[in-house]
Image 1 (cartoon, rainbow, N blue to C red):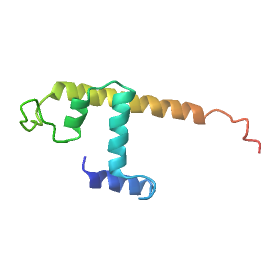
Image 2 (tube, one colour; image 1 turned 120 degrees about the horizontal axis):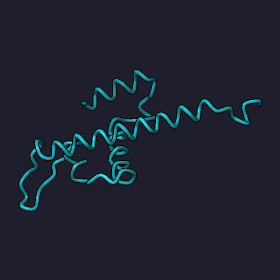
Image 3 (tube, rainbow, N blue to C red; image 1 turned 90 degrees about the vertical axis):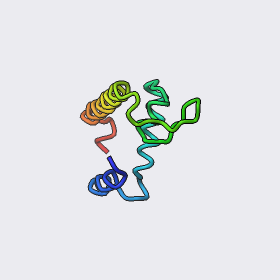
Image 4 (cartoon, rainbow, N blue to C red; image 1 turned 180 degrees about the horizontal axis):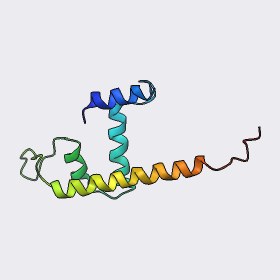
Length: 100
């Protein structure tokens, strides 16, 4: 997905440029994939299309690690779905402050 596609989706949701940027989503995703999900950084960098160099200095090949990257993206999708489900279950609860 291109940066412009993400930008268009954000603006369509009413999220302005001072609230969130497409690059910010990529950085957040990378951080969460490492810290919360324990995903290998080399797989993340390949998926983000960053220029990753191997031990000999050869430029990376985008076709590498496709099965692992596919699995990584499924883990990421499951993680986001879990967050969404938790958020929805919390918003349906009655707040003790709702009577204010």
